[in-house]
Structures are given as C-alpha cells and as structure tokens.
Amino acid sequence: MILNGLKMELLKLRRSHVFWLIVLIPLLFTAANGSLYFGSSQAGLDILRIVTFQIFLLFIYPLLMTFVISIIVQMERKHDGIKNILLSPIQKWQMYVNKVLLLFLLNMIILTVSYAVLFIMTMIFDLHTSLQFFDEFTRFSSMLLAGTLICSIQLLVTIYFSRIIMPIIFAILLTITGAFAATHPVFSHFHLWSYPVRALYNGYNLYTLSIVSFLLLLIFTLIGVYLFPRKAMVSR
Image 1 (cartoon, rainbow, N blue to C red):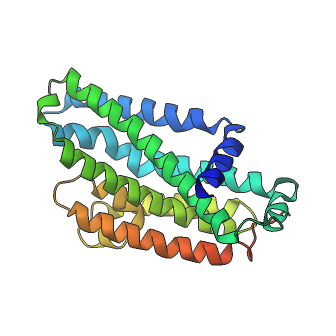
Image 2 (spheres, one colour):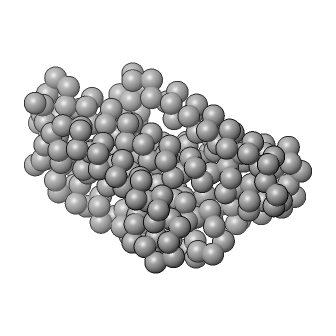
C-alpha cells in the first residue's frame, strides 16, 4: 500500500517537471563549487568534499526543497484535491507518510547526483584513491536523514499555513541563520538547518547525527500525521 501511495505521489509530481530541477540544480551548483578546488591551497578529499557541497547545502538546497514542497502542497490544494483525498478509503496517516517518503526519495536523488559530481571531481584531481566507501556511505546517510528532517519540518509548516508566503519566509530565515549556526560549535547542535552541513566535517559524530535526525524525523512526521486531516491543507 505504501509503495502504491508513493507511486501516486511520483506520478502527480511528474506533471510539474520538478524532477528536472531536482537533477539539474544540484548537478550545476556542486560542479561549479567543486571547480573552486582549483584555487585551494590545501589538497585532500576532505577539502574537495567541503568545497563541493558546503554552499549548496547551506543555501541552494533548503530553498530548492522549499520550492518543491510548495509545489507538492499547492497541487493538493488545487481544485479541492485534498478534500477528495480525505474522503477516500485510504488511511489518513498513509497520505502524509507518502509525502514524507517522497521527500526522502527526492533527497536521495539530490545527494546521489551531488555525490556523482564529487566522484568525478576526485577522478579529475586524482583523489579517488582517498575515497572510503563505508565512510562516505555513512556521511551520505547522515546528510540524507538530516535533509529529510528539515524537509519534513518545512512540509509541516507549509501544510499549517493556508498561503505559501509564511513558509517561504520561514525557510529563508532558517536558511540564513543556519549558515551562521553551522560555524558555531554550540548553536549548530540546536539549529536543525545546519545538520546536513555538519555531516561534511570530520569533527562531528555521524552516528549521533543520524540517530538524532531520525528520531526528530519520526516526531515531526507523527505531528504531521495528526495535523494533516485537520489543518489548512485545504482550498482557499
């Protein structure tokens, strides 16, 4: 049932041509940022990874996902679509969980494209021998869970408000403050928008980051399951 629901979400999203953005934007920005490694005085995989991912994860990624989430919610509101869905025999919790799973899948696509760019960069700069599959997979998983976490929060906020202006303002403020929080050793623990960037650095425990992100994702998903049939995800 969940797989069928996820398939339906994908089919609805395909009409909006969002998948092109999901692939092209991370491809272009990570490639452009990775090319800055040419001017770096420090060599090594860690520097290349940070150069490739940092700007994208700090600014472009959260705003991109805010745009995607706004499209997902607006598609449901259009023509009283959500009212028709809530009258269907499908479990209400499943409807919301399908959207969270969709965001998880979109995050996986974004990170897979970005990591493909990183792998190509390691070949160009002859750093591919430094790649450790298990370490990079752990880092990938941490970024994936942290990214899905902030997307679930953004989805919840977008559902709660009947207009998209407040969710966009919310995302911009947290994106800007998250950029500052990522550089602070204490504040970064509490600012969830800095979590994906923290996964880039070796100084953080990736297992702890993954567990915290997963538990918070469960909490916000449960809140969304409760609010989904009751709140403002309705037509104007």
